[in-house]
Image 1 (tube, rainbow, N blue to C red):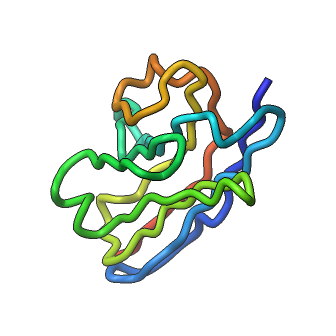
Image 2 (cartoon, rainbow, N blue to C red):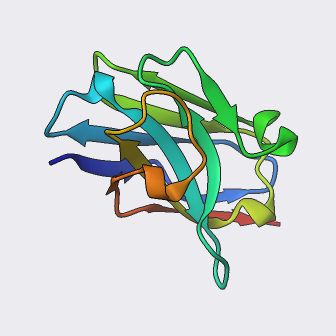
Length: 126
């Protein structure tokens, strides 16, 4: 079993920054590919970013995300991060971290992730 706990969400004005954290426990964190997803009200859960098991590879949903968000991980702390800069109201969503014990690289597919956190709310005001 893997337990994932997100933190760092909150209310921020447009143009501001937040850093989300995802703390993992239960199994060897350094063997997991990890990812961030988000779900806005009335919308489906969407891929945001992914990082490979050793942090050597990252992937983002699109160029707009890549230019503002940075995914990273610290395997010595069993923690993954999402640094979000230049936040926009459309970034408002519940942000989830996810772990895959079956994929070592990066993947955008929710089905490849077999563990999920409970989510942390990010609200960006205009």
